[in-house]
Each structure stands twice: as C-alpha cells, then as structure tokens.
Image (cartoon, rainbow, N blue to C red):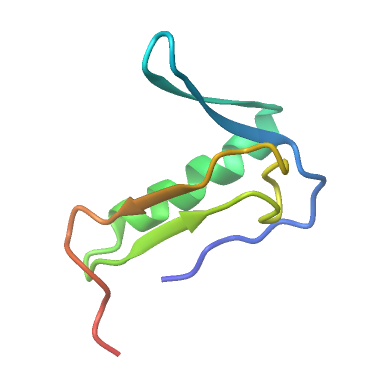
Length: 79
C-alpha cells in the first residue's frame, strides 16, 4: 500500500467543533481530495494498516488536529 504525498501548499484543516461534537475537515478541494484518496486507499487495503495525518504533514495546516484511522481489515500488514 502506498499513499500519494503531494507537493502542494498546506491547505487542509482538521478540527473538532466541541459545541456540536463533530470532526470538521475544511480547506480547498485539491487538498481535501488528497486526504480522501489517502483514506480511501487505506480503507481498501485488504491486508490492514493505518493512516496517521498530523499538523505539518504535507497538506495539513499547522493548526490542524492529528488524525489516526485504522483499517477496517485489521492491523499492520505482514512484512
């Protein structure tokens, strides 16, 4: 499994709206598309894995919250 690491400006913000108790992902469509593609790729990997995105990581702005998502297919793939 590999993830696309774009050479773009940091344009996506992940934050928690504590009043509504929801996770909000905002930013331009190109940056959100990269995040969506990475999540889709991790979710479709049949041998498991996880995705961790954190502030300062390529397209996320410094004010962003970290995001960790585990594959629905289990832990890390055997290597």
